[in-house]
Length: 254
Image (cartoon, rainbow, N blue to C red; front, side, top):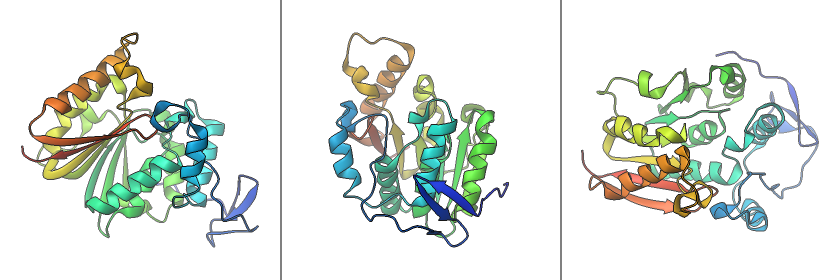
C-alpha cells in the first residue's frame, strides 16, 4: 500500500495532525450531522438523521475527512456509507466478532474502515472494488488508518476474482453493483460459514422496491434479491430502514 499520509489535513474548518491523532484546534464535543444524501428509511428526514448522529458514537477525524474528500473529489459521493451507517456496521462487526469479512464494493473505503475498527486481532477484510480509477484514492485513505493491516484491497470483479470456494468467511458485506445483487447471492453464499452473516445495503432502494412505477434494471434486481433471501430456508433475515435499507441475513445451513 502507498503511505500517502499527510502530517496535517484540513477537516471541516479544523486542522488535524495525523501524526499525533489530535486536532490542532479544539472542536465541539457535539457530533456534526453526516450528510448522508438520504434520510432514515429513504424519507429524507434530515432532522431525524441529525438527532441520531448527535446521539451515537462520533465517527472520528479520519472518517470525517474521508467523507468530506469523497464529496469534494468523487462522482456519486452518496455511495459512501456515512456516519450513521458506519457506526451500525461497526456495531454489527463488534457483535458478530468475525475473523474474516468479504466486502463487495469498496468505493472510497468508508465502510471498510468502519468494519476494520471492530475486527478482532488477527481479523482481515478482503474488499473488492471493480472501478480501478478509485484504487489510488482508496489506498491512500486505507494507509492512514491504524487498522490498515487488517484490510486487503482487491481491484476487480468479485464474481470473477473471488477467493476459491474452499475459502470461508464469517461475514459478507454486499454494497456493489445493484444489478448484480442476485448474482452476488448465488455466487457468494457458499463462501459464508454456517452461522455466518450476509449484510446487504440498499435493499429498500429509495422505496422503489415496493413502488410499481419503478421497473428499471437496478430496482428489478434488488426486488429479485429480496425475494430470493425471503424464500431461502437456509437463512434468517431482518431488514432495517436505515438510509436506503439494510438487510442482515444469517446463514443457518448450507
